[in-house]
Length: 76
Image 1 (tube, rainbow, N blue to C red):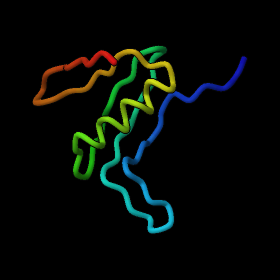
Image 2: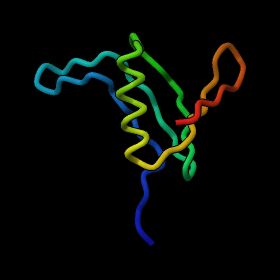
Image 3: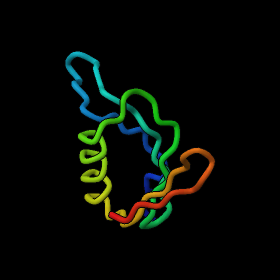
């Protein structure tokens, strides 16, 4: 049985030399779905495009998150 990542902290627009990033989010994986939690920083449309590309590369087809107490789902 191979090890599988189930939780990841993703930093958008990260510059590792300067230790800077735009926003950070915790991603929990559930098969082909992912749950976004703990968003911090300034999350722009550029950040979303980068995150969506990262999730698609991992085989994720749907993303869930809570906004103002309601569960939202985005299909990738």
